[in-house]
Length: 393
Image (cartoon, rainbow, N blue to C red; front, side, top):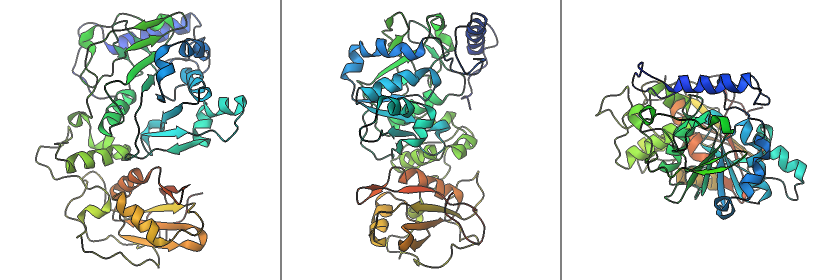
């Protein structure tokens, strides 16, 4: 999913630098599991001991909310953030269900539990989704790298997620001028990188942490100031629901968010189903099966997806929750469905949307939803397109 860059067949390329680093680390046994390191952020030897470097760093001491990538070599840093009782945010793997999650250890968590929370399994077991409207201010961003220069130029593994995640955080207002970006690497990963290899979407770093030193880059090159929609394809948009939701918000705010395979002047992409509904429309029936046939198309639709009805499951509703409370929450998050099926006795409900695009946008908008102080489970229902949608396993 790397964002396309101009042809630079003459001279060194990002891939040349990546392979040089990967080959060197393999040949010199400078990495731990997983091996080989090719096409990965290398889990360099000594990465878990980076906690000592981090704890002695003034910028870390001042930070309150820290976003750390889920890469294996950053596991020790995630643990250090948790042990320091700071807020730890971790991106959702491949951004499938949202931008990032907040890791919430159980009360009285032991050091062993905190270590588990810092792993990829812990991220799944002890995390709470963070919605786009959450009041988040990230003080420190920690990214993995394959290579980095002392000037702050950074090269990842080639998928573009770290760059895109930063741009998305800017778009949702989670990044400020005082936010610091740092990467942690082995000393051998600090190399010269020609500035002409960088594009305007590439994320630079302010500090480099290695097992032996802390490098202040003094980088003056501007970081991404938001999502560069003209470099985003419809295919990428379809794979990342939260990206679709951010685009809808920006277009509604008057920003020209035209995709690279979409001509200027194209209609505003459809967001959560409510936006095309007249203000005086009534709520649909709260009983009966989820509709099986296509609904009347709205005036605007996302061109890359077929219009097949899709259903979102809402579960873990706190005991005593009333349907009116759920309706109010859906309305507040601009996630009104075409049909709501209420199962209050089972503490669950089903939200039917006109197509998968609208359901994905609603899923993104509802991440982190809570009612009566309790976290609500929100995800796609199983067996989309069947006679009746079912709750997930």
